[in-house]
Image (cartoon, rainbow, N blue to C red; front, side):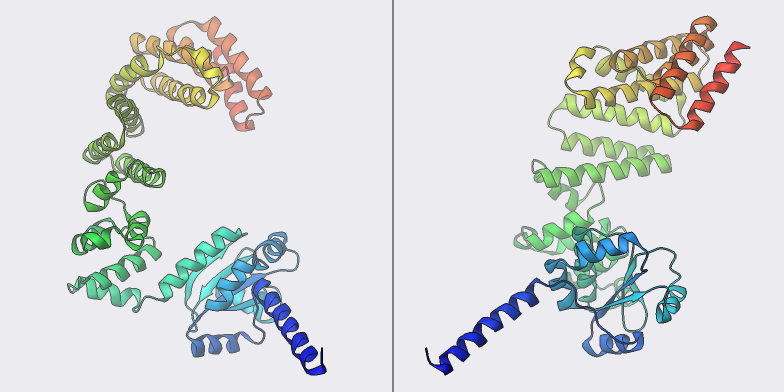
Length: 409
């Protein structure tokens, strides 16, 4: 091998090694003053990713070792952002902490060249979550107009498909509800566009309503696990909204939507009855609650063989919690003997499934209200013992102690 060939071969190997090292590295941090970083961001039309740390911060060191050194993170951040790291307790770092009103470490931010914060991330951020945040910021930075400009254009009647897409993406970044606007977008695209990955992603990220084109689309694919989870999320969010607003019309929409999702009538009816029971409980409608709870317990729980829960402890725990919550609500809202005795049956079923301080406490309170003082005291004493064995919160143990003392008077 002559000298020229050896030289070329050595150069080739070194180039491969250098390139491999560059590809394998994590985030490259820029050096210099913060002002120089701002100028660089403006010149390159990029956002700045700034990590503000301290030398004593454990999670900061964990981010350095586990996240910032990751090659995938390095590739995404080096290609798309100006990356800057600064100690929050030294020099310019102190000024940045004051300016951005930071109170925890690590704090990292995506900002533009005019100091505007696009996204703020506090605490340790695992690799997957940091990549997800960076992708969101990257998408938002590709949108052609500001939030205000998009809002004004929509108000003035702009409705073409590319605009609506950008408008939805920008609003999603602000965590605004896009349900209605998403349906507008879907009404304007072709059947072929509806089948695209781009549209599927938009629907999964923004669908929120129980009626309309987006929900209808999801229902057609309800047997897919990802889609099923999304539908369940929409139903759950709207149920919470119905409770908070005391909106029975929305509750009925939730029940209809769950009926469309469920595979059988029995499955739909159990979930819907449970949802109504919780709705009436949380919206403080005792009479409606009791009627619904009585039907739910007798139809779906009391007839179950508790031995079957030994192999399904998670299911048993779910049913036990329902029995406890319902029994507690009865003892706190009713004085009628008939209703209290019904709740006694429910709490006994809970005790068959699992014996804990909480269900012994509720059983004790029910019996005390019914006049069985001696047995109530015994059960409250047992609840106290179990609470200590379970290492329950000291405040809960104090509550039990006070109830125990009151019962013995």
